[in-house]
Length: 339
Ligand code: NAD
Ligand code: DAU
Image 1 (cartoon, rainbow, N blue to C red):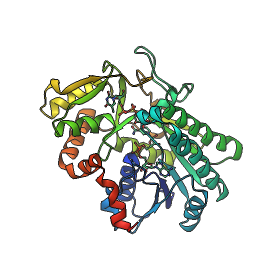
Image 2: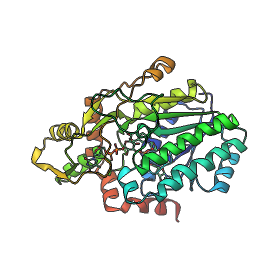
Image 3: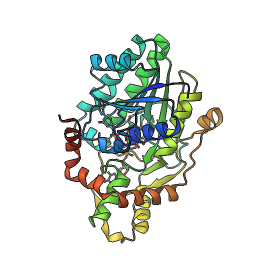
Image 4: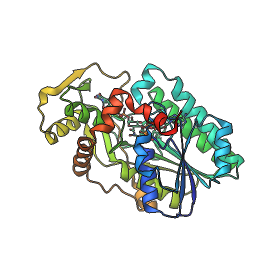
């Protein structure tokens, strides 16, 4: 790995914590500083196994805090920033979009300026396929040339963040790259998202809520495949470029839920159809041929296998998600750090 001191923002969340574990497991010569505000979605238990690792350091703080961001970069000294920090849940953005604008737009501005002012630090921004809007059943998948057309406050804030990152490249020659990835699944995903919500509800013998008709389609990718793609972009990606990453696994929500019911040996009467999400995007799909031809990346984890292993992980780690569902997980930081 050409970078030795990496600042990961939002590393206490789902994808960021998996990224830190993956990178420290693979590279013994790198150091990672994890800057995370520990919002409701941040959970230090996601990184419990790395607490004693001398190459890992946690800094509690907000990416909007200019002073802290600059100090963290200078004290470590950072040569790569990977920005995972975000408000990430669409339903929450429908109820109140203020924190989405604050973190996803104001926050990345602070990070980009700090990268610029500290010697044009290499910057990779983690984004989403939702910036492209949604597709009809017969439309071609999104690729890097698809025009932006975000339809939720969440995806609009992510679109703004992508535009800002690219603007710093064009205006200031800041060495950025962006990845736009489809729906991730895997261990440590907060149980407000479809797959962990359904899995943990079924483990508790509760009903599983399905929005509208259940016909909406998502393209599912294992979090490890996503993070391997991020690693390859960092190593081999062309500065200023965007890469679309997808799982090549389009499924309706009903198909996903029925598959989980089957794996867990549960009956279809546990499904509960509820009111649809406002502005519910119909379909996402990704054409990742650019990442395949330029980086040699493609997803490697077959969905059925990845899903079975993920369900197994939630079954084997009830402590992790039960503490989240009860709210107890937020006490962990206080116990650990005495604050
Ligand atoms: P998550 O909600 O699980 O984690 C977000 C993390 O960011 C949390 O640890 C939280 O404490 C931290 N955070 C939030 N606001 C912060 C702030 N102001 N300062 C510092 N830290 C802050 O999210 P996730 O699912 O892991 O997603 C990570 C990134 O990947 C996001 O940028 C998201 O938009 C993007 N993404 C997610 C998916 C997906 O399927 N989950 C797919 C594509 C892209
Ligand atoms: O496409 C990438 C995006 O995937 C990321 O940018 C977001 O951060 C991530 O949250 C995810 O967004 P979605 O809205 O697609 O994910 P979610 O898990 O919330 O919902 C997946 C689908 O399942 C969606 O069509 C809504 C539906 N759903 C969701 C929940 C939580 C249900 O039917 N019932 C539910 O209870």
